Length: 115
Length: 110
Image (cartoon, rainbow over all chains, first blue to last red; front, side, top):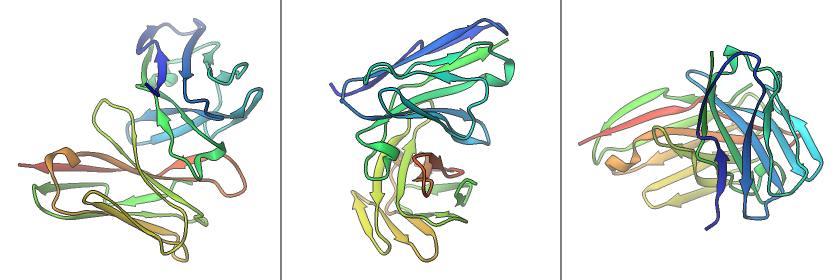
């Protein structure tokens, strides 16, 4: 089954404790992206990746890191989480870059709470 | 800046129609529409690539006016399953950044 998976689905952590949210897709997509969703602010792009070893900032990259060492995986790293990073996070992928000509497939989401 | 959607929220009875608008202050070269049900991930509805293009998806269709930098989503004879939040989205010109609109919450009542 074609899908995007994220883990964990729910996470409660404390300020400053490094964490990684994993994202994996099995569709051989080139473009992958991370979004955060907050009430009243909608979906905002954090980082995206055009292909292996090619990543770039979205609109809200501060406090986050990403890497793309394999085509299928695109982990989101919070090296020192803070309460303002409490949010619902989605990973997404599409066949080609930018999603201009392709739909994005979304993972199920990760609800992160930073205390 | 995010594309602005209107209305922000709408409540319908089953069988009624609705129009959701998406307006951008910057040039739009393509528009995508997604629906997100409560507690779930967004799901793709359709892409419009050219000005003047119209598409249909069951009883949901959309139009794209490139000159006006606007797109509209039309929901006809709404069903309970149409409830959710609708987002337009686009790729920022000259980049591969993706940006979603402000969203429209739609609720269909029996």
